[in-house]
Image (tube, rainbow, N blue to C red):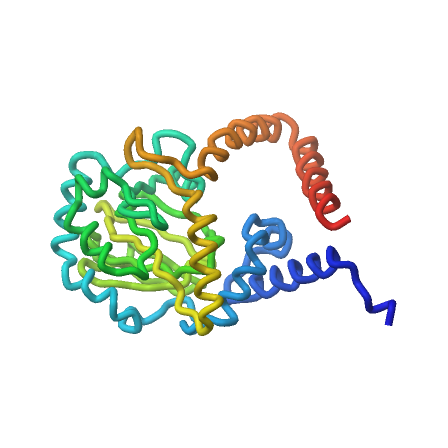
Length: 305
């Protein structure tokens, strides 16, 4: 019996590895095993595994928006939302972050993606209320929409293959101003969809996905995080608690003066360290990778031993 008795830290390690493998094996499209197990999404693997196991939504890349009846009001008012988005776009408000304070989407800005936040996990933005009040009012009437923004993919822009780290939500896109062309598309777990004006699409953003606009026309959509429906009330409470504590900490700003969450304040300083690491990688790749793996192994050792 003693041989089967494991210390708590060993059980923690087993749970992390099992959850990470479960997340890795979901879907048809996968990263290589090394990237999958060293990706930062591994940190949330146990939480995400719970979300998947008790999800009322089917385990598919795309979901039928009609299952989420509360969202129909957005599609019914898509032209109202489009008009506010167009005005923002014309005035230059849909843009990349002005500094390193948007941890969730920082890498997207380098390939042309832009955004304007409408709400973010309990954080209402004064700029959104002032500049697009009708859209903000519509969103306020849908409690399951936890975050929303206008997102632009200009001509020639793309999003590289990635998966979002948080499985407590599902992604909703509503086409506002799109090329209406298969040449401007998103591909989720190997299945391709192209945006259309006034049409909604929903997908599970924790499947590997990428997007590209190879047309000469800009694509602007309403982008929402919708709370994942779960079977058990305690898990729904836990998901909302997690969102209130962790996701709220990743809040950022449209304009100077709006509050920035603790994670993004940390990211601002962390990015300076990361920039130095990139310089080292450019000069000496061997030293960079030796240092990187030494740090990873050191952290794992500190946690589990």
